[in-house]
Image 1 (spheres, rainbow, N blue to C red):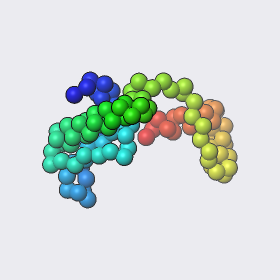
Image 2: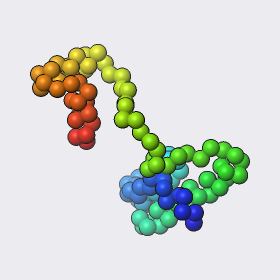
Image 3: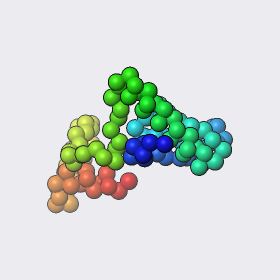
Length: 110
């Protein structure tokens, strides 16, 4: 298997609906692989990602950049209802911090 596929973000989880483990790849959200064990699900999704990448490269399609190596600016623009904006601005003011700092802290709580 190509070592480049190790840069992608894989996840294995249980699918109650299918009663099997499901292998997923964040960079290829339309792909999945069902298997009876987590190890087989991971191996399956890695195999299918490899095949898809080879097909994309053969047809000169752009392969997604792995999330792990993407550069992020640290800026995130979010639209929220005006009422929520007002409530958060008030909460930030009462706490003596910026709205940006409050939002960042809230997102980090997840």
